[in-house]
Image (cartoon, rainbow, N blue to C red; front, side, top):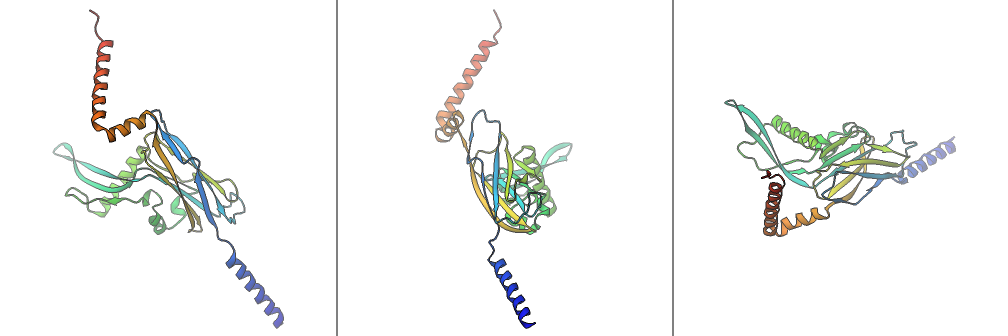
Amino acid sequence: MRRVVLAAMIALGAVGIARADAPKESVEADASTRQVAITSSFTGTEILVFGAVSNSMQPSPEAGTYDIIVVVEGIPTPAVVRKKSRVGGIWVNTQSMRFASVPSYYAIASTRPVDEIADRAVLDTHGIGFDHVRMVRAVQSRTDATDPAELETFRQALIRLKEKERVYVKSDFGVSFVGRSLFRATIALPPNVPVAPLTAHVYLFKDGQMLGQYDSRVMLQREGIERYIHETALTRPLLYGIFTVMMAAGCGLAAAFAFRKPA
């Protein structure tokens, strides 16, 4: 009997060691393109973010063992949100909030709603989801809102404005598994996407715990006449100003000649 118990204990110990030595799951990902050319005829595009779960224990794509969240965000930029109120029958700006740092572009796709994937503390730490986007307030002015409820109101208003401009995009079921470990997500870039580097963050979750993260970069660059005009405006402002005035004058003379009344 003692030999049987000892053998069982040795077997359980071996299983425990095997589990401890088992490789952990991790995530690797990339984007379908590392560079997007912005020209005068740019009407928007899509980038494909794809990857795989290393050492996947998922039996099938539909099993739901893992959750994937893809966040693509642009560089931080300042922003101002103003609130209008009716004063003496006239609508005027009565309150405002200035942000020193707000993502210029923010797109998020996930296997399901992010609030069902992880706790709020985890989402806040990594800035995952519209309710958790990192927004840094600027120095207050006398018209800035100070009440916490009002601060959240301004924050949500800014997100709504960004959504209306299509530079903040959310897709709760935008990530899909196409195998035991392979996954993919499509991120839309609108025509007005800010021309700046984008960072794609891919997060791997299991039972609410983050198992891994992978980051990659996507460069947005002006090309053709768009790039030449932009560089001229920055490096040779006098030449750019003279050229702009001459072009406006030429267009005005052409319009006057084309639409002149016959004698």
